[in-house]
Length: 409
Image (cartoon, rainbow, N blue to C red; front, top):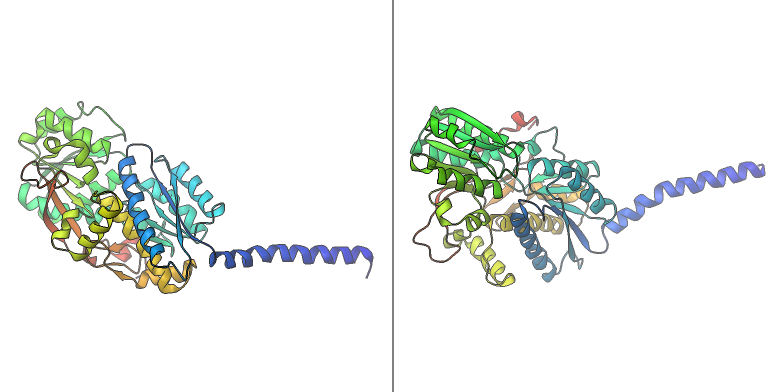
């Protein structure tokens, strides 16, 4: 063999070794060192208060996991990154978490479009992503993957439960004030879907940009139609501002105010007068502790960790999503994505509010939906702001079917 051929053979062998070694090293690393959970959430912007609660819930789940020994001695780290409520920023941060920080799992997000951007990055790299933001789209086959899990409720569930409660009680002539992005659009569809059996009539659907500060140009049009129910399909600061201005305008005198997702953070920020009588849906409310043992246990741990504070619905989501993944990793004895995905599909859990499980076809968390009403009287303390007026139990019949989402089963 000539010297040139010998050199060529050595180069080919070196190239082959370089091509195969990283996979082997990464496979070993995946089962060694700390377990890393990447956590992209909007720490700045109009949803910052909810994001802070998401982080605290996740921190509590990780603290419990580490104190109980981790996974065969491996402890867990939470890597929090700010998405700035931007899909592009979220995709960049998620890519860094996976490629640079070697995150084993991704959890988090707020906003439908942001979570889809995070999911796209994670699924291409075969990394499990558990979303804790409402979306119908993420369950559809075009955006879904075997590594996509949706711990949050989705608009079909949320708007459906709220609609089935309010339509028989408050009327069929409805109007919408809607944030002009996926969350708002999907909530409108959810209410209209739930309203069909009741014969509801949509009078108007007014769209507004996220972060709008002045709703006065919209309100006369709504008032002139005299709807029985006005649905505020927006979130965060937008919800607070629009409900306050609509109340000041006098709309509440003859129209019931309803929002699909009524959060503790929004209610505390907006105040009792602004939100008095407003009805909405919730993943969680801390007063579940009166009747649900797992809620009492979760609240007590949260109070101890955070100087007596009660958890919000987003605290509960942050906690349950991270705890579910870490529980599945323990059950699988591994952080391998395929093994943990299988373990998550098999998981039956009750971490905060009663039984939950992931539907096999789309990995949607099947769970109870709370319907709550804001109050301004008979409050035991500053956090006793809602009455739980109904609880819709976990029921797959309230979800869009697997076939409708594009799944085979």
